[in-house]
Amino acid sequence: MYSDESDITLVERYVDAELDDVGMQEVSSRLETDEPFKALVDREQLLIQVIRYQGHHDKLQYLKRMERHLLHNVHRASPSSLRPWHYQVAAAVALIIAIAWLSVPEDPNKLFRAYFKPYPNAFEPGVRSLHEGTQRRQALQAYELGDYETAVGGLQQSYNDHPEPGLLLLLGNANLTLGHVQEAEENFILLIKNYDDLDLQAKWYLSLCYLKNGDLERAKNMLKELGETEISYASKAKELFEKVN
Image 1 (cartoon, rainbow, N blue to C red):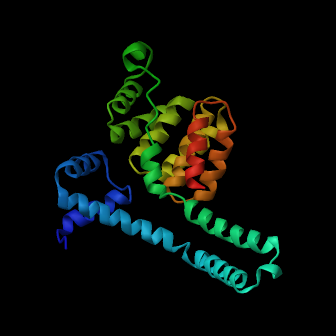
Image 2: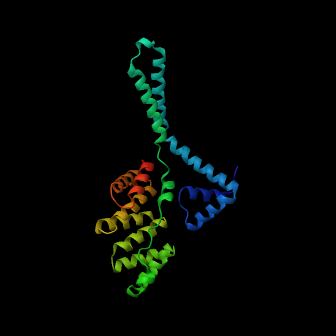
Protein backbone atom coordinates (compact mmCIF):
# COMPACT_ATOMS: atom_id res chain seq x y z
CA MET A 1 0.00 0.00 0.00
CA TYR A 2 1.36 3.41 -0.99
CA SER A 3 2.00 5.45 2.18
CA ASP A 4 3.72 8.71 1.17
CA GLU A 5 1.23 11.29 2.50
CA SER A 6 2.70 14.16 0.47
CA ASP A 7 2.32 12.17 -2.75
CA ILE A 8 -1.23 11.18 -1.85
CA THR A 9 -2.09 14.84 -1.29
CA LEU A 10 -0.41 15.77 -4.58
CA VAL A 11 -2.40 13.16 -6.48
CA GLU A 12 -5.68 14.20 -4.85
CA ARG A 13 -5.05 17.79 -5.90
CA TYR A 14 -4.13 16.58 -9.39
CA VAL A 15 -7.34 14.62 -9.94
CA ASP A 16 -9.34 17.55 -8.50
CA ALA A 17 -7.61 19.94 -10.96
CA GLU A 18 -6.28 22.10 -8.12
CA LEU A 19 -2.60 22.16 -9.14
CA ASP A 20 -0.82 25.16 -10.61
CA ASP A 21 1.47 24.87 -13.65
CA VAL A 22 4.47 23.86 -11.51
CA GLY A 23 2.49 21.09 -9.83
CA MET A 24 1.14 19.84 -13.16
CA GLN A 25 4.66 19.71 -14.59
CA GLU A 26 5.86 17.69 -11.57
CA VAL A 27 3.02 15.19 -11.96
CA SER A 28 3.53 14.88 -15.73
CA SER A 29 7.24 14.23 -15.25
CA ARG A 30 6.74 11.62 -12.54
CA LEU A 31 4.03 9.82 -14.50
CA GLU A 32 6.69 9.05 -17.13
CA THR A 33 9.33 7.73 -14.74
CA ASP A 34 7.79 6.76 -11.38
CA GLU A 35 5.76 3.54 -11.65
CA PRO A 36 4.48 3.47 -8.01
CA PHE A 37 3.38 7.09 -8.38
CA LYS A 38 1.63 6.30 -11.68
CA ALA A 39 -0.16 3.38 -10.02
CA LEU A 40 -1.33 5.74 -7.27
CA VAL A 41 -2.72 8.18 -9.87
CA ASP A 42 -4.48 5.33 -11.70
CA ARG A 43 -5.99 4.10 -8.45
CA GLU A 44 -7.31 7.54 -7.50
CA GLN A 45 -8.80 8.09 -10.96
CA LEU A 46 -10.44 4.68 -10.82
CA LEU A 47 -11.90 5.53 -7.42
CA ILE A 48 -13.45 8.68 -8.88
CA GLN A 49 -14.95 6.67 -11.73
CA VAL A 50 -16.44 4.17 -9.26
CA ILE A 51 -17.99 6.96 -7.19
CA ARG A 52 -19.38 8.62 -10.33
CA TYR A 53 -20.88 5.40 -11.64
CA GLN A 54 -22.35 4.60 -8.24
CA GLY A 55 -24.66 7.57 -8.67
CA HIS A 56 -26.33 5.70 -11.53
CA HIS A 57 -26.45 2.38 -9.72
CA ASP A 58 -30.00 2.51 -8.36
CA LYS A 59 -31.54 3.43 -11.70
CA LEU A 60 -29.59 0.72 -13.47
CA GLN A 61 -30.59 -1.89 -10.92
CA TYR A 62 -34.24 -0.99 -11.40
CA LEU A 63 -33.90 -1.38 -15.17
CA LYS A 64 -32.12 -4.70 -14.76
CA ARG A 65 -34.88 -6.03 -12.50
CA MET A 66 -37.44 -4.97 -15.10
CA GLU A 67 -35.46 -6.73 -17.83
CA ARG A 68 -35.19 -9.94 -15.79
CA HIS A 69 -38.91 -9.86 -15.03
CA LEU A 70 -39.86 -9.43 -18.68
CA LEU A 71 -37.45 -12.04 -19.94
CA HIS A 72 -38.60 -14.48 -17.24
CA ASN A 73 -42.20 -14.07 -18.35
CA VAL A 74 -41.21 -14.48 -22.00
CA HIS A 75 -39.31 -17.68 -21.29
CA ARG A 76 -42.11 -19.17 -19.19
CA ALA A 77 -44.83 -18.47 -21.72
CA SER A 78 -45.60 -20.89 -24.50
CA PRO A 79 -44.58 -19.74 -27.98
CA SER A 80 -48.19 -19.63 -29.09
CA SER A 81 -49.14 -17.21 -26.31
CA LEU A 82 -46.36 -14.75 -27.00
CA ARG A 83 -47.02 -11.59 -28.93
CA PRO A 84 -44.39 -9.59 -30.87
CA TRP A 85 -44.51 -6.75 -28.39
CA HIS A 86 -43.29 -9.06 -25.59
CA TYR A 87 -39.98 -9.41 -27.41
CA GLN A 88 -39.94 -5.75 -28.37
CA VAL A 89 -40.40 -4.53 -24.79
CA ALA A 90 -37.71 -6.87 -23.48
CA ALA A 91 -35.32 -5.74 -26.20
CA ALA A 92 -36.16 -2.09 -25.50
CA VAL A 93 -35.35 -2.46 -21.80
CA ALA A 94 -32.03 -4.13 -22.63
CA LEU A 95 -31.26 -1.25 -24.99
CA ILE A 96 -32.11 1.32 -22.32
CA ILE A 97 -29.69 -0.37 -19.94
CA ALA A 98 -26.92 -0.34 -22.54
CA ILE A 99 -27.54 3.34 -23.29
CA ALA A 100 -27.58 4.17 -19.59
CA TRP A 101 -24.10 2.65 -19.19
CA LEU A 102 -22.77 4.37 -22.30
CA SER A 103 -24.25 7.78 -21.54
CA VAL A 104 -22.61 8.33 -18.16
CA PRO A 105 -20.95 11.75 -18.51
CA GLU A 106 -17.20 12.11 -18.18
CA ASP A 107 -15.58 13.67 -15.13
CA PRO A 108 -16.05 17.50 -15.35
CA ASN A 109 -12.59 18.28 -13.96
CA LYS A 110 -10.95 15.96 -16.46
CA LEU A 111 -12.92 17.57 -19.29
CA PHE A 112 -11.97 21.03 -18.07
CA ARG A 113 -8.28 20.16 -18.14
CA ALA A 114 -8.64 18.69 -21.62
CA TYR A 115 -10.47 21.66 -23.15
CA PHE A 116 -9.20 24.73 -21.33
CA LYS A 117 -6.39 26.55 -23.09
CA PRO A 118 -5.81 30.22 -22.19
CA TYR A 119 -6.91 32.63 -24.90
CA PRO A 120 -3.87 33.83 -26.89
CA ASN A 121 -2.76 37.39 -26.29
CA ALA A 122 -4.30 39.30 -29.19
CA PHE A 123 -2.41 42.45 -28.23
CA GLU A 124 1.25 42.42 -29.22
CA PRO A 125 3.14 44.55 -26.67
CA GLY A 126 6.17 44.79 -28.90
CA VAL A 127 4.15 46.17 -31.79
CA ARG A 128 1.81 48.48 -29.94
CA SER A 129 4.08 49.55 -27.10
CA LEU A 130 4.39 53.14 -28.37
CA HIS A 131 0.65 53.58 -28.02
CA GLU A 132 0.12 51.88 -24.69
CA GLY A 133 0.78 52.85 -21.09
CA THR A 134 3.55 51.13 -19.18
CA GLN A 135 1.18 49.27 -16.84
CA ARG A 136 -0.95 47.97 -19.69
CA ARG A 137 2.11 46.90 -21.63
CA GLN A 138 3.57 45.09 -18.63
CA ALA A 139 0.26 43.34 -17.93
CA LEU A 140 0.01 42.10 -21.52
CA GLN A 141 3.62 41.01 -21.48
CA ALA A 142 3.12 39.13 -18.20
CA TYR A 143 0.08 37.36 -19.68
CA GLU A 144 2.04 36.41 -22.78
CA LEU A 145 4.83 34.99 -20.62
CA GLY A 146 2.40 32.98 -18.50
CA ASP A 147 2.90 35.11 -15.38
CA TYR A 148 -0.82 35.23 -14.66
CA GLU A 149 -0.47 36.44 -11.06
CA THR A 150 1.19 39.64 -12.30
CA ALA A 151 -1.13 39.88 -15.29
CA VAL A 152 -4.33 39.85 -13.22
CA GLY A 153 -3.54 43.02 -11.27
CA GLY A 154 -2.28 44.92 -14.31
CA LEU A 155 -5.15 43.84 -16.56
CA GLN A 156 -7.73 44.77 -13.93
CA GLN A 157 -6.25 48.24 -13.47
CA SER A 158 -5.87 48.73 -17.22
CA TYR A 159 -9.50 47.78 -17.73
CA ASN A 160 -10.60 50.16 -14.98
CA ASP A 161 -8.69 52.97 -16.68
CA HIS A 162 -9.75 52.18 -20.27
CA PRO A 163 -12.47 49.49 -20.51
CA GLU A 164 -12.06 47.17 -23.50
CA PRO A 165 -13.53 43.71 -24.14
CA GLY A 166 -10.10 42.29 -25.05
CA LEU A 167 -8.66 43.19 -21.66
CA LEU A 168 -11.67 41.68 -19.92
CA LEU A 169 -11.33 38.44 -21.90
CA LEU A 170 -7.65 38.12 -20.98
CA LEU A 171 -8.42 38.99 -17.35
CA GLY A 172 -11.03 36.23 -17.20
CA ASN A 173 -8.58 33.76 -18.70
CA ALA A 174 -5.84 34.73 -16.27
CA ASN A 175 -8.22 34.29 -13.33
CA LEU A 176 -9.44 30.94 -14.65
CA THR A 177 -5.88 29.71 -15.14
CA LEU A 178 -5.11 30.60 -11.53
CA GLY A 179 -8.21 28.77 -10.30
CA HIS A 180 -10.08 31.99 -9.46
CA VAL A 181 -13.24 30.62 -11.04
CA GLN A 182 -15.73 33.02 -9.43
CA GLU A 183 -13.73 36.06 -10.55
CA ALA A 184 -13.39 34.60 -14.05
CA GLU A 185 -17.16 34.03 -14.24
CA GLU A 186 -17.75 37.66 -13.30
CA ASN A 187 -15.30 38.84 -15.96
CA PHE A 188 -16.92 36.81 -18.73
CA ILE A 189 -20.49 37.68 -17.71
CA LEU A 190 -19.58 41.39 -17.68
CA LEU A 191 -18.06 41.08 -21.14
CA ILE A 192 -21.13 39.27 -22.52
CA LYS A 193 -23.53 41.83 -21.05
CA ASN A 194 -21.63 44.99 -22.02
CA TYR A 195 -19.95 44.23 -25.36
CA ASP A 196 -20.72 42.78 -28.77
CA ASP A 197 -17.07 42.03 -29.55
CA LEU A 198 -15.58 38.78 -28.21
CA ASP A 199 -18.84 37.83 -26.47
CA LEU A 200 -18.95 34.39 -28.09
CA GLN A 201 -15.39 33.68 -27.01
CA ALA A 202 -16.40 34.78 -23.51
CA LYS A 203 -19.33 32.32 -23.60
CA TRP A 204 -16.95 29.47 -24.43
CA TYR A 205 -14.78 30.26 -21.41
CA LEU A 206 -17.84 30.88 -19.24
CA SER A 207 -19.06 27.36 -20.11
CA LEU A 208 -15.69 26.07 -18.89
CA CYS A 209 -16.13 28.01 -15.64
CA TYR A 210 -19.46 26.27 -15.11
CA LEU A 211 -17.83 22.94 -15.94
CA LYS A 212 -15.03 23.59 -13.47
CA ASN A 213 -17.59 24.39 -10.76
CA GLY A 214 -19.63 21.28 -11.53
CA ASP A 215 -22.62 23.34 -12.73
CA LEU A 216 -23.34 20.96 -15.60
CA GLU A 217 -26.77 22.29 -16.53
CA ARG A 218 -25.52 25.81 -17.17
CA ALA A 219 -22.44 24.44 -18.91
CA LYS A 220 -24.61 22.33 -21.22
CA ASN A 221 -26.96 25.24 -21.99
CA MET A 222 -24.04 27.46 -22.94
CA LEU A 223 -22.33 24.76 -25.01
CA LYS A 224 -25.56 23.99 -26.84
CA GLU A 225 -25.96 27.67 -27.72
CA LEU A 226 -22.38 27.88 -28.99
CA GLY A 227 -22.77 24.67 -30.99
CA GLU A 228 -25.46 26.35 -33.07
CA THR A 229 -23.22 29.26 -34.11
CA GLU A 230 -20.73 29.64 -36.94
CA ILE A 231 -17.71 30.50 -34.77
CA SER A 232 -14.54 28.45 -34.53
CA TYR A 233 -15.56 27.18 -31.09
CA ALA A 234 -18.76 25.58 -32.45
CA SER A 235 -17.24 22.17 -33.18
CA LYS A 236 -15.47 22.10 -29.80
CA ALA A 237 -18.69 23.13 -28.08
CA LYS A 238 -20.65 20.33 -29.78
CA GLU A 239 -17.97 17.79 -28.89
CA LEU A 240 -17.80 18.90 -25.26
CA PHE A 241 -21.59 19.02 -25.01
CA GLU A 242 -21.77 15.36 -26.00
CA LYS A 243 -19.23 14.41 -23.35
CA VAL A 244 -20.95 16.39 -20.58
CA ASN A 245 -24.48 15.31 -21.55
